[in-house]
Length: 158
Image (tube, rainbow, N blue to C red; front, side, top):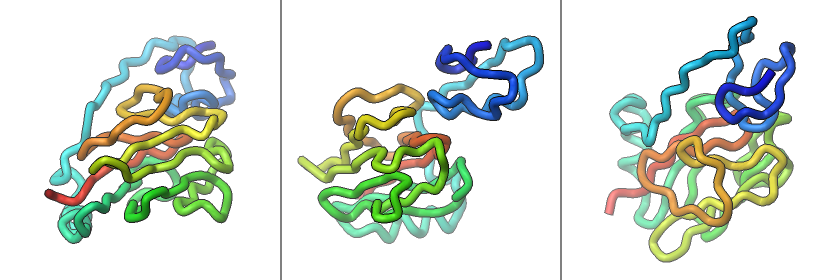
């Protein structure tokens, strides 16, 4: 069987794709699946608490809000020049799941943007469901996927 999102080989026992992290919803027989691709998420879709957190961001900082994974609702502040993300307890953003590499990705503040860089992770890092290769500048509302975690990026209003 193949993952309906990325085409990677999967087994019937898999709950999620080991390559891209997409939920397989216990596929049975027919592997046809329609996947809606979202380019971004609007802040007003995430509720008043998320809006208040984003409105309170200091200039030059940003936030990732977890919307999928075992830490849904958690917020991670990006206010340093380099913020690390991974399964290692010393990472700035600790994502506790085997689909996340120990040192998975870096978020870099440079040239007025926050950039994401994959650290040669096993499952890759995705922005708006596209596997990244090199540094990618994030825009407000972008979906960032690390392992099976999906996070929405918001920067401080200029």
